[in-house]
Image (cartoon, rainbow, N blue to C red; front, top):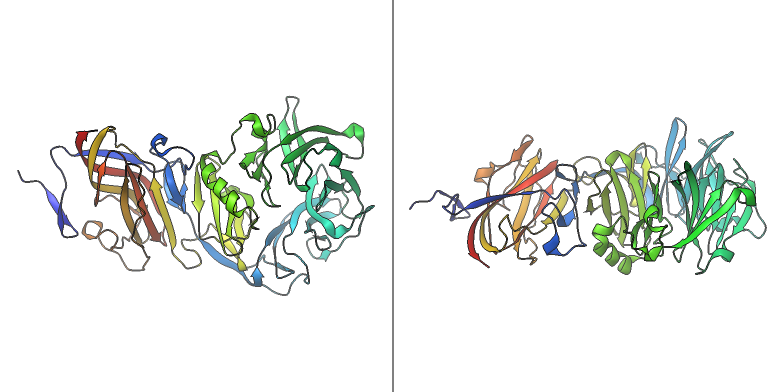
Length: 518
């Protein structure tokens, strides 16, 4: 009997056979899963999902990045935004100085310099006199920006050295500050930005000691309406919750409770997601609403539960590195958690799709810090502030993406199968090279090809050789089969991709021949 075939890499590959079967797997829109056993995962998950972003119905290669402000010297460790009505400006800290980075291009003269530390915590605050960006770093005198100039305010308090204030947060029309290496916070009178400041000690409430790391505003509906609570988080993972508006008035400031979670990672460990507060801790990325009612031992799940294995490894190996930071990016429907792999050299981001709850990992954005300016995402690198999630390249370099799907029995569990052909359904408007293969029966075999991007016009898919060809042209779905090989019960697709174009992946088709029962 003659079977239809075509030549791939010098060999005849059958296109059909009397026993050949076809199976379609969805793209991993449920995102990265490094928690569950490989045999228990769904088809629409992935064990590796680097630089692919899972959306509602497809998975796309993440967008790129571009230089925005240059000439900042060494490592940029703070990106800060002033928001004052219709006015918005961006600033960055590096080399002991703060520069305005609102406009793209080389920065001008520093706003101020000769600082001891570039790691400024900041918040925006408004009163009848205007709007202010208030910044503190625990080493230098606090400062605020009023839309046109910077001021060093006079701050006086019994036993206080103002340069020791290391965290600032606006709550209920007041500015609150944390004093470094203590369990004390300080607060101004209502709508005040300078002058006398009052201490509130949390030592009598603490059972674990340590020092205050951060403060956040938690919005809660307790049944009698929505209210904001002040949350103070210590280096040991104790959380103190207060309700009220005036810490100096016992009738208007109440200690609601003390809870314990994992110790926080980094000073910039809190971020607001809607009404929720997310904390970066040694237990993962913790939503307060799930953990606080029961405490650390209550069995609640972290937001990062599905990527808990990777987060645990990162915390264990890199918890002391500077650069840990969560940030919500509403325009991109993302929440990013920056993880410094090698401080000031390499960073990854674990990224949550805030619409679907799916996770992935971004690489090659080597960020020391992140910020939002004009609804856009920016990060500080070495001497440069970059605009993120823009364009199709990383400042002119290819975007390399890697995936390894979950294992699939191809609709026929318990029977060995011979894989003959596969086709990921990719929609692309750019040139694309790919190294592809399959893993068999829960083994791992990283693709050996190193794809590169080129501006060539491209070849026809049917005539191209996998891992040697370039696919390009107008946006279209590539639907031609490619030869792969493997024999076993369960299979995972893996491939590396390099491109400077938009790529979306909707599904994968498999063609296999069933063999003997196991």
